Length: 118
Length: 118
Image (cartoon, rainbow over all chains, first blue to last red; front, side, top):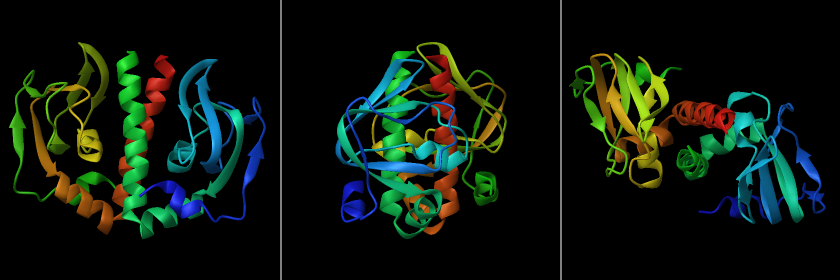
């Protein structure tokens, strides 16, 4: 399963131009984003953590632990995003264990990549 | 919910003495562990990533993405652990969305702590 398939037909999307800021480290976070098109850079104090492409998700952490954004997200290329509220996120986890496992897989990949930087 | 409540009555536990190695970075990982008692140090190339105490879990990443262990786990104090297989982990995610969210919360806490080290 790719997250993309669950969100491809969402009518409610947001568009960002290259270089545009999506959210800033420390902001309150009310949405996770699924990238329908384009790519996004995640950074902490100016250092790139990750580039996320089409079909990827980011911003899930603020929904999981209701804490401020841990990183800044910037559109690298023009992108189209589906915002996912905490409520929808929780109902997806309930209804689709595959979705839950995929979110964990994304987080595991981020943790492994961080471990390698230590 | 605490993970502990799901595992407290598990008959199948493993005991480790202080300083004993539970698994080593690079090993194949077939279990996640829930700490019934004691505490565990997670490290990468000798550097401590985290200390996990009673009620905590570790080793979940190898179940999620079927990759080798990303860190070494060592008993800090004498500890009693419940090993959880990939099969059981997946059925817990299916049956208990709260369990899934708690695992995500643990991973989010680890990611936030790593972000702060960058």
